[in-house]
Amino acid sequence: MFRKLTSTLFVLLFTVTLLLGQDTKPQTADSILKSSYKEAKASDKNVFLIFHASWCSWCKRLDKAMQSDELKKIFEDCYVITHLDVLENGDKVAQLENPGGREIMKNLGGEKSGLPFYTFLDASGKKLADSNVMPKDMNIGYPGSDEEIAEFGKLLKVSAKNLSEENYSTIIDYLKKNAPKPAATSH
Image (cartoon, rainbow, N blue to C red; front, side):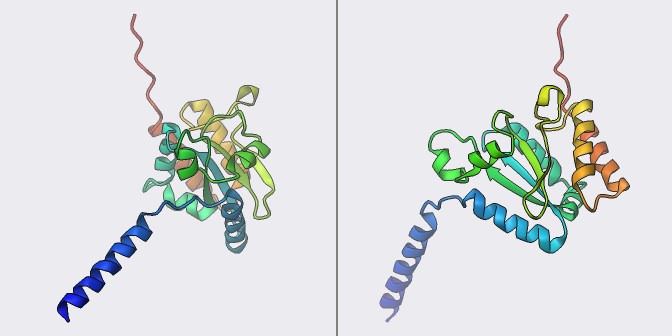
């Protein structure tokens, strides 16, 4: 009896391990956005849509800032934060990239913007603003310079329904305090 039970448990464990180890395809960009719009409507928020990739260090830096103890609750109170993985390379395209994400990025004006590219959408999918606000319609990406931080702040002011002046200042102060340091130059 014990041997049969042990064998059955082994087969069950092996089957579960195989099922969990199978490659799963990423969700489609459309399904992710539909879910985000639904949540935004229910919570009376706008969508902060971030296009990123696994190789993008500036994308990781933006996520780290938005997930920091100081900023996480502010962003979550103001937005439905949504990520679409795009512009992957090699086998990572099939593993990580959200099907349809590149087309959505193109349709929202981010085709030549680099990453992270982000846009702010209302609960019906109408574009409110995007990160192509630097001179010559260049992308902010991670807001690290004083000029980029100021433009990022303007985007927040036009897109966040629930952003208090105090929370706005907290975000700007955090970005300034954590701005990348300029590379040292030799003379």
